[in-house]
Image (cartoon, rainbow, N blue to C red; front, side, top):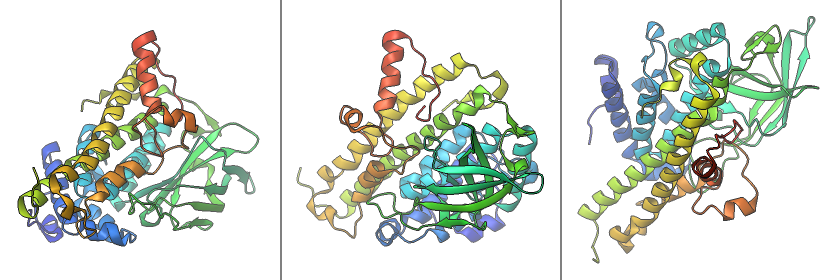
Length: 390
């Protein structure tokens, strides 16, 4: 058990290498682990946990070093998410979503936009949330202002992971009278942005994934990611957002599974009465082609499906070695299975008949789609087309 405290991070040297950052994540996990079961039962808004992520520097892991960021890459970010998820799946997910939304400006925006966002985020230790579900036209974006230079977001999102604990929120909506989606980053305390605090699920209780109402949230056209003179120029790189968050899920699941094993092993040794990563596509966005993106998606889909199986099986089978007494509420061992089974959605679930053909699956992010993509590639050589599931 680590004896490191947040005060030590302020006085000691900052992490430099990937291994340093993974070690820092393990220190954070050790602190989270001390009361993980109690916090899971309480289900309180994780303000203190996000403060811990900030104090440790993990929130700026991907930020530019010249502005105080860690200057690390996505493979390191995935390992960091996995370490944190070992102790607390909810906080691991929050951190993973934060990394994605922090990177969203680079995925979708212009160079000027993402350089500005990443610099400000690193300098100010912004924690990102997102009110995004591009499959649904549940938020309308209209133009307003003397020169129609403002955008106004109006509608409602069912899920907004990170909502109440975020400094800034990524909004998404459909531009009125078009099919164009618009993404913009706004302060989380913006007028008209109301988080409903209605996340009350059996797992991932601390992810703050409740609904959000957008009642005329205003932002300038200049904040619309990727738009120049009100026109959007798509790139294949734009479509990597779903694949990136899927790898976040993979590492959350693997972290939860590893945490379940470690926790169950400790319980068994001390209490039980026994009865018997190179992701190179981010290096050169303009070099991403449909072929390289499709090949990459198939590999991610395969590992996502396998990670889901492993995490669900381990979360279920740890009770075989820990014994009947380990099912006590105070031990909290059930949270590992519940967290994988419940993981809040990136998109709306598919039709029931598809879910039933895809056991095992998590409720909000069924692996049926991942298995289908891998199968079509193996049998027919068909590369997956970019969709809101892939």
